[in-house]
Structures are given as structure tokens and as C-alpha cells.
Length: 144
Image 1 (tube, rainbow, N blue to C red):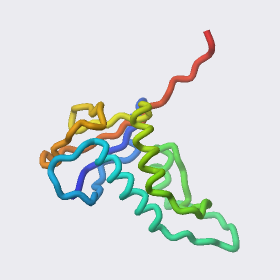
Image 2 (cartoon, one colour; image 1 turned 120 degrees about the horizontal axis):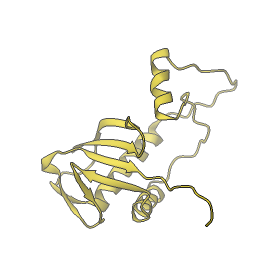
Image 3 (tube, one colour; image 1 turned 135 degrees about the vertical axis):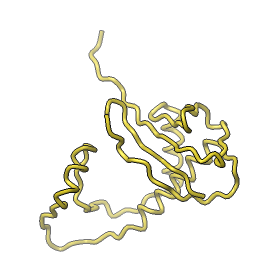
């Protein structure tokens, strides 16, 4: 089943990831938030692990295309396509981390205009509304 996902960060005008379609391995029309998060993480880890890890003997500069540079700087992360950590991601660890991060309030999930606040909350995927993930940041301050 295809779902639409947008990733945003508070305080930014443009989304970190604009709306993109993600195919999850689920056929039913109703799903709990916990299962949805696990399926999205599973898909993302499989996509990450499928990337080829090219080990290069020589380090040389890689310049992004001119029109792509503005997109990279707008998101706040400029990368050049190199992966330096050759370890594959662990699916179960990633699922546990995502669930723990949601429980700790590290990100919020919205389905259409409704915030999903509980992992047990059910979602009707037949409506085909986009999901919005908002990464929350803690405020830095001094001691009182």
C-alpha cells in the first residue's frame, strides 16, 4: 500500500522532506500507529541497506550539481553521497528506537489535520490523507 509522507521541523518554512510516496507491506485498511511506524521504519531501513557501499581507495572531492546545491543548503544538511559507516542498519533496533522516540515526544505524527497521540490509535488508510511527521526540538536554556 502506498502512503504519502511529509517530514517537517518546527521553525522552518520549507519541509525537510516534501511529500513523497512510501510503499509499505500492508494490505488492510485499518492500522495502529505503532504498526505503521514499524512498517515505515522497516521500509526505510531496507532502502538504506540496499544502497551500495562503495569503498574508494582515493578520496576526491564530489561536487553536487549546481541546481541541487540550493536544495541541500535549504534543508540544513549538505551531503555528497558518501557513506563512511559500512555497517548495515539493524531493523529491530531501528523499530525500537522509533517507538521510544515517539513515546519520548521527539516527533509528532499528524494524519490530515489530526494529531495522533497514542500508539494504540487506529488509522483508516482508505482515506489516503498524507502523514506529516514533525521533528520536535528541545529548547536550550540556562539554569535558573
